[in-house]
Amino acid sequence: MVLLQEMDADVLMWLQENLRQEGLDRVFSFFTRLGNNGELWIALLVVLFIIPPFRRMALTAAASLISSALLVEFVIKPLVARVRPYVTVEGLFSLVGPERSYSFPSGHSATAFAVAYVLARMLPVKYGAPILLLAALMAFSRLYVGVHYPTDVLVGVMVGASVGETCYQIQKALDRSRVKE
Image (tube, rainbow, N blue to C red; front, side, top):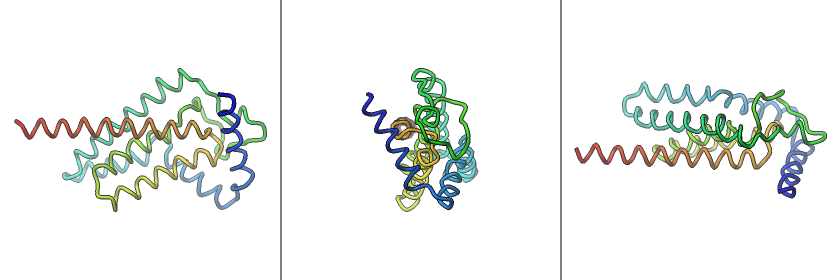
Protein backbone atom coordinates (compact mmCIF):
# COMPACT_ATOMS: atom_id res chain seq x y z
CA MET A 1 0.00 0.00 0.00
CA VAL A 2 2.85 2.37 0.82
CA LEU A 3 4.43 1.70 -2.58
CA LEU A 4 1.14 2.55 -4.32
CA GLN A 5 0.86 5.79 -2.35
CA GLU A 6 4.42 6.71 -3.28
CA MET A 7 3.71 5.99 -6.95
CA ASP A 8 0.56 8.14 -6.75
CA ALA A 9 2.60 11.03 -5.33
CA ASP A 10 5.40 10.55 -7.87
CA VAL A 11 2.97 10.74 -10.80
CA LEU A 12 1.44 13.95 -9.48
CA MET A 13 4.81 15.57 -8.91
CA TRP A 14 5.93 14.50 -12.39
CA LEU A 15 2.83 16.10 -13.90
CA GLN A 16 3.39 19.30 -11.94
CA GLU A 17 7.09 19.52 -12.79
CA ASN A 18 6.95 18.41 -16.45
CA LEU A 19 3.55 19.17 -17.95
CA ARG A 20 2.15 22.18 -16.17
CA GLN A 21 2.39 25.39 -18.15
CA GLU A 22 0.15 28.42 -18.41
CA GLY A 23 -1.81 27.36 -21.50
CA LEU A 24 -2.41 23.81 -20.30
CA ASP A 25 -3.22 25.10 -16.82
CA ARG A 26 -6.13 27.04 -18.30
CA VAL A 27 -7.27 24.11 -20.47
CA PHE A 28 -7.32 21.53 -17.68
CA SER A 29 -8.74 23.96 -15.12
CA PHE A 30 -11.57 24.46 -17.62
CA PHE A 31 -12.16 20.70 -17.96
CA THR A 32 -12.21 20.41 -14.16
CA ARG A 33 -14.78 23.23 -13.89
CA LEU A 34 -16.96 21.48 -16.49
CA GLY A 35 -17.41 18.65 -14.01
CA ASN A 36 -18.26 20.81 -11.01
CA ASN A 37 -21.57 19.69 -9.49
CA GLY A 38 -22.30 17.64 -12.61
CA GLU A 39 -23.60 20.81 -14.30
CA LEU A 40 -22.42 19.95 -17.82
CA TRP A 41 -23.88 16.46 -17.61
CA ILE A 42 -27.16 17.71 -16.17
CA ALA A 43 -27.49 20.31 -18.93
CA LEU A 44 -26.76 17.68 -21.59
CA LEU A 45 -29.30 15.28 -20.10
CA VAL A 46 -31.97 18.00 -19.94
CA VAL A 47 -31.42 18.71 -23.64
CA LEU A 48 -31.62 15.00 -24.47
CA PHE A 49 -34.77 14.60 -22.34
CA ILE A 50 -36.51 17.37 -24.29
CA ILE A 51 -36.04 15.40 -27.52
CA PRO A 52 -38.59 12.53 -27.38
CA PRO A 53 -36.46 9.78 -29.00
CA PHE A 54 -33.70 10.41 -26.43
CA ARG A 55 -35.82 10.50 -23.25
CA ARG A 56 -35.16 6.90 -22.23
CA MET A 57 -31.43 7.42 -22.75
CA ALA A 58 -31.49 10.67 -20.75
CA LEU A 59 -33.34 9.01 -17.86
CA THR A 60 -30.95 6.06 -17.83
CA ALA A 61 -27.93 8.36 -17.82
CA ALA A 62 -29.54 10.55 -15.12
CA ALA A 63 -30.09 7.47 -12.94
CA SER A 64 -26.44 6.58 -13.45
CA LEU A 65 -25.28 10.12 -12.62
CA ILE A 66 -27.34 10.31 -9.43
CA SER A 67 -26.44 6.78 -8.31
CA SER A 68 -22.71 7.28 -8.82
CA ALA A 69 -22.73 10.69 -7.10
CA LEU A 70 -24.56 9.31 -4.07
CA LEU A 71 -22.36 6.21 -3.87
CA VAL A 72 -19.13 8.20 -4.08
CA GLU A 73 -20.02 11.21 -1.93
CA PHE A 74 -22.07 9.56 0.81
CA VAL A 75 -20.68 6.03 1.02
CA ILE A 76 -17.15 5.58 -0.32
CA LYS A 77 -15.55 8.95 0.45
CA PRO A 78 -16.64 9.00 4.12
CA LEU A 79 -15.56 5.37 4.59
CA VAL A 80 -12.10 5.83 3.08
CA ALA A 81 -11.57 9.45 4.19
CA ARG A 82 -8.45 9.97 2.07
CA VAL A 83 -6.98 13.44 2.37
CA ARG A 84 -6.36 15.45 -0.81
CA PRO A 85 -2.88 15.12 -2.33
CA TYR A 86 -2.02 18.81 -2.14
CA VAL A 87 -2.31 18.44 1.65
CA THR A 88 -0.02 15.42 1.96
CA VAL A 89 2.39 15.55 -1.00
CA GLU A 90 5.18 17.99 -0.21
CA GLY A 91 5.59 20.59 -2.96
CA LEU A 92 2.32 19.79 -4.77
CA PHE A 93 -0.17 22.60 -5.16
CA SER A 94 -3.71 22.75 -6.45
CA LEU A 95 -4.47 24.94 -9.44
CA VAL A 96 -8.13 25.25 -8.46
CA GLY A 97 -8.01 25.91 -4.74
CA PRO A 98 -9.08 23.70 -1.87
CA GLU A 99 -11.79 21.06 -2.24
CA ARG A 100 -14.38 20.44 0.48
CA SER A 101 -14.65 16.66 0.29
CA TYR A 102 -12.27 13.74 0.63
CA SER A 103 -10.13 12.59 -2.26
CA PHE A 104 -11.00 8.90 -2.83
CA PRO A 105 -12.54 8.22 -5.27
CA SER A 106 -12.82 11.11 -7.70
CA GLY A 107 -16.43 12.23 -7.90
CA HIS A 108 -15.77 14.16 -11.11
CA SER A 109 -14.38 11.00 -12.73
CA ALA A 110 -17.18 8.79 -11.41
CA THR A 111 -20.03 11.03 -12.54
CA ALA A 112 -18.40 11.82 -15.89
CA PHE A 113 -17.99 8.14 -16.69
CA ALA A 114 -21.39 7.22 -15.25
CA VAL A 115 -23.06 9.45 -17.83
CA ALA A 116 -20.57 8.99 -20.68
CA TYR A 117 -20.68 5.21 -20.36
CA VAL A 118 -24.47 5.06 -20.65
CA LEU A 119 -24.49 7.47 -23.59
CA ALA A 120 -21.70 5.57 -25.32
CA ARG A 121 -23.66 2.32 -24.92
CA MET A 122 -26.88 3.83 -26.26
CA LEU A 123 -25.58 6.09 -29.04
CA PRO A 124 -23.73 5.28 -32.26
CA VAL A 125 -19.93 5.20 -31.85
CA LYS A 126 -19.48 8.48 -33.74
CA TYR A 127 -21.34 10.24 -30.89
CA GLY A 128 -20.39 8.01 -27.98
CA ALA A 129 -16.63 8.15 -28.54
CA PRO A 130 -16.36 11.96 -28.24
CA ILE A 131 -18.44 11.84 -25.05
CA LEU A 132 -16.07 9.24 -23.60
CA LEU A 133 -13.12 11.43 -24.65
CA LEU A 134 -14.68 14.39 -22.83
CA ALA A 135 -15.10 12.24 -19.70
CA ALA A 136 -11.47 11.11 -19.97
CA LEU A 137 -10.26 14.72 -20.27
CA MET A 138 -12.32 15.65 -17.22
CA ALA A 139 -10.84 12.73 -15.28
CA PHE A 140 -7.26 13.55 -16.31
CA SER A 141 -7.83 17.20 -15.41
CA ARG A 142 -8.28 16.16 -11.77
CA LEU A 143 -4.70 14.84 -11.78
CA TYR A 144 -3.33 17.78 -13.71
CA VAL A 145 -4.79 20.39 -11.33
CA GLY A 146 -3.49 18.44 -8.32
CA VAL A 147 -6.69 17.59 -6.48
CA HIS A 148 -6.67 13.78 -6.88
CA TYR A 149 -4.25 10.92 -6.79
CA PRO A 150 -4.13 8.64 -9.87
CA THR A 151 -5.80 5.83 -7.90
CA ASP A 152 -8.65 8.21 -6.96
CA VAL A 153 -9.29 8.88 -10.64
CA LEU A 154 -8.88 5.26 -11.72
CA VAL A 155 -11.35 4.02 -9.11
CA GLY A 156 -13.71 6.91 -9.91
CA VAL A 157 -13.70 5.85 -13.57
CA MET A 158 -14.33 2.22 -12.58
CA VAL A 159 -17.18 3.16 -10.23
CA GLY A 160 -18.79 5.40 -12.85
CA ALA A 161 -18.51 2.82 -15.63
CA SER A 162 -19.81 0.06 -13.34
CA VAL A 163 -22.80 2.11 -12.25
CA GLY A 164 -23.36 3.09 -15.89
CA GLU A 165 -23.33 -0.54 -17.02
CA THR A 166 -25.71 -1.49 -14.20
CA CYS A 167 -28.17 1.25 -15.16
CA TYR A 168 -27.86 0.31 -18.83
CA GLN A 169 -28.60 -3.37 -18.07
CA ILE A 170 -31.60 -2.40 -15.91
CA GLN A 171 -32.91 -0.27 -18.78
CA LYS A 172 -32.46 -3.17 -21.22
CA ALA A 173 -34.33 -5.50 -18.85
CA LEU A 174 -37.16 -2.97 -18.54
CA ASP A 175 -37.31 -2.68 -22.33
CA ARG A 176 -37.52 -6.48 -22.67
CA SER A 177 -40.30 -6.70 -20.08
CA ARG A 178 -42.31 -4.03 -21.92
CA VAL A 179 -41.99 -5.95 -25.19
CA LYS A 180 -43.43 -9.08 -23.52
CA GLU A 181 -46.53 -7.22 -22.32
